[in-house]
Length: 150
Image (cartoon, rainbow, N blue to C red; front, side):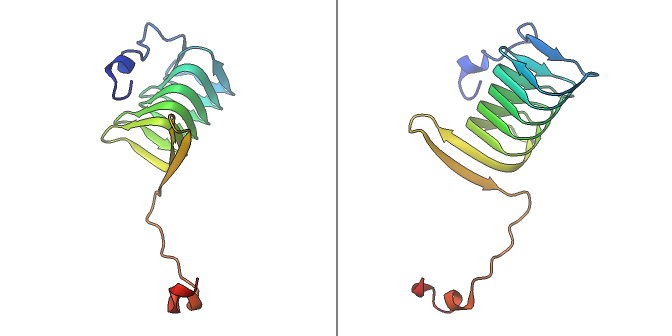
């Protein structure tokens, strides 16, 4: 799915999707699936998917998403916990992202922090991506006068 032609072909097509929340449907509560899920409607709750999850163009999830492979085309207001995350050009995420791989298409929007997991070393590195420019921090007078004293 991400920078690997074999993975790209492994994303479920519309015929391989096990669960579909259609465009005019709203689900209040959590959704747990052992297979693939596509959201074209609205979910107010946590989505847990052991397979692939797609938030379609008209889809909206207001809650956290836990998935192996996640493709966001629509909108997500919550935190992401995924092995592989792909943000399509029309994606809009407000929340924290925690993933092993991340692909962001030109035009995608997200606001929050991104934490990338390194599978081989088992380490985590965090990149903070503020929605607005950070404000300067004032140093105490003693440190500002002589920074070598610290």
